[in-house]
Image (cartoon, rainbow, N blue to C red; front, side, top):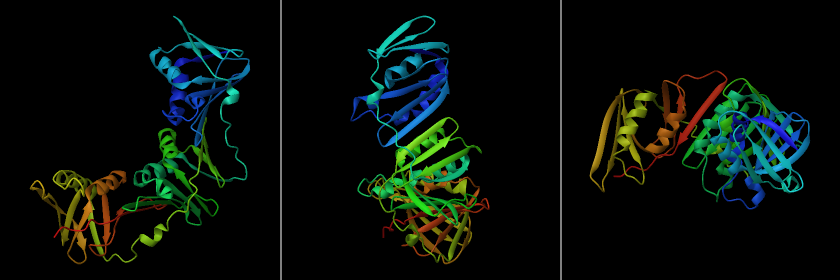
Length: 371
């Protein structure tokens, strides 16, 4: 049993799905790629039991067989080879594998494909289709806000919500919250939570273009399919917190400022902040914003003044600079609006200019001021 394939093309496709494979696996075969050859079609599968990714490509073959090949040695071998056609031959009796190139032969031991875990099947699923650029944006602009606290499993993923308002992506760790909505996506009335690992893998391979992505889901799994790639992941079985309850409705104070200037000022002043709280203090009134930070333990302090537009009662409020910087990095706009109510209530950041079909909201909890 053999097939011929381009070494560079094979490596490229293996790298798309190789991130699924964990370094500490519960089963040795989870360290392998499953190769499923059916004539000229090769399907390669990787799984960690919670997430399964597969990629399809064309090869030169007339046979039909399966083999599990150790991922690490295969990837390392292909990285070390120059671009060339390679022949991979398999002895189905012993599961031994021989790779033949222009200049050499390499032998390794595979495993029986029958031991490789079966993929979940898409039974009783609902489906929504959306542009890859929307999925890419929804993931990349919210994922950073998801929690790492395993004691709150619901918050360790991104919440996908489909209703009459379109599709909404939400992530929160109780200190910050990001909500991104696209009104031009139509689907059912449902919701599910996708784990962080699966979304990081998706983010790396989903193109930022108009490629159509099929998202199918049932109570236990989600199935993302586009181009020659499929990702299947087990959903987080937990109830997502009522995020709308924590968003302040009345925010009479409005700060408008140039995003890049604000970002640069935060980066500079936060160097002098307390290394535990990362607190920066915003003091605003009229057309001036003061950004300051201090670390009393080491007598470090910094302050800067920026031009802004501020409508409301003069206010002084503290925030974690790391959270603000993460949020500003995720926004693609020139100017931002920060809506505020009181110094002990959350601030809301929105882009000043936005696409009519998009609705952004970023919420950040204040850090109590040191008096």
